[in-house]
Length: 169
Image 1 (cartoon, rainbow, N blue to C red):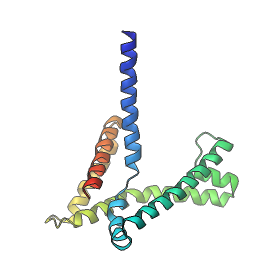
Image 2: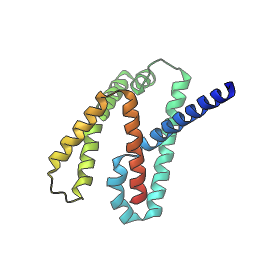
Image 3: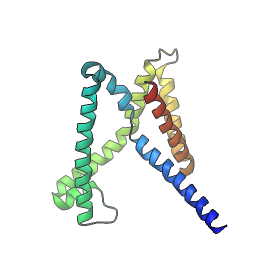
Image 4: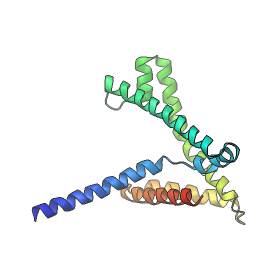
């Protein structure tokens, strides 16, 4: 019985980790992939766009590796990029990075809603785009007011929809 209970807990933990990995990987796929790739694909072709994705992935890998090195050199609880800029460059660099972080997170939701509005615009729907934007804002605010478990579940299903869209497009 003990082994069975341990095996059950292991399976539950593995399922939880698989769901977490799926959310982490698929959560990085943004609407820019659907909105911005069409014109690039039409002009450059699939080999060009694959080469660009590989090049950008290499640059992101280099940046993340550098950030990891800085964080591992002198770990600080609750550290962020503005602390690293302040500590290793200058006070003004830390100040600028803090405001850049604030601005980038503040503009993220309006950007996503605008991109979704552009995608909906291709449907030739008889409903005004303002109605769709209002629905999206209500859904986003509603999901953020619910408990974390419900948010995680919906994030998993939204990520799955992205996969189905990528396979279908």
